[in-house]
Image (cartoon, rainbow, N blue to C red):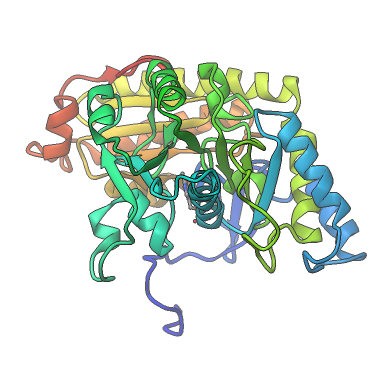
Length: 421
Ligand SMILES: *Cc1c(COP(=O)(O)O)cnc(C)c1O
């Protein structure tokens, strides 16, 4: 029985999960589901990872929470390790992705204000973006469905289409402080930005004195086969936000920045009660122990190629339903002619597979990074079986979005990650 004491903002599936192991979730009825959604890319190391359990238990017996008015050595260590692994010099810990983005936006605005350019405070974002559900990050994402009914959107965000440098140049004005983008759009439908576009944005930011903010909340922490997705493009941002996979299921967000970008952030400029508390940083350090390993990331790349190949094989057999397979590493998307919610529900009901619907009519495939080859093969088999079951009955022949970017009836495969599609 579902409780009506919860604010009804989520449409929840009816089954109740009791425990999990690796890529598998078990309901209170004892039914096992193959989880290729991983809590929306959060459970990077799957469920009940012994190393994470040990880290949580060890810290749980020592200290759960400590105010940020005291030193937290494990947090200092996490910050050193994250910054050593990328462009950044400093890190701020928050509890969620949206908060990490709020910090990123504040750093960018302060950067200019502290340098005597307070008029530069606007941030350029992109169509299809998702940056969170707080008032500011909702405005940054610009999705009219999320903004409706909440009063005027927080000011300070302009938006243009991705992969269009002429539009970006036209949208930049004397008030622009920063450009903010997901290297691979997640919620928007697993849309990887081309490496050329990311490099052009970097060059433009350098030319115009703007800060480049990368939202790697979903695509970071090994998801694409690199520790951070932008590393494949050979560029470095000035600011980057992380969350989701960082805590492997323990809520933690992080905002990383160069010292130069963050020069306006002095004591008192920002804060968080819970952010980076001892439990959160202990678990995040344990996640990093596993993920930040060349062998681990190479294996994610290998498994990503395997998964993509098998899903493309299935797609070939269902050309009327599957329009496109796209993504990088273990961040994959299946664009269909049937509503993505229909495929997600059919996979869950008919094949006991969990996936996540996204924008652009895409079904997200986000297995835990520890998924096995056999589980990937099992997913492909279940997907095939589900698509056979769906048949043509659910094909929406006049689905507008689908018509725009790929005619039904012909399976299109996007270029490998970083290419234009
Ligand atoms: C999930 C997500 C967010 C928001 O994270 P929350 O933890 O839900 O606040 C922001 N940006 C991207 C790219 C995300 O995928």
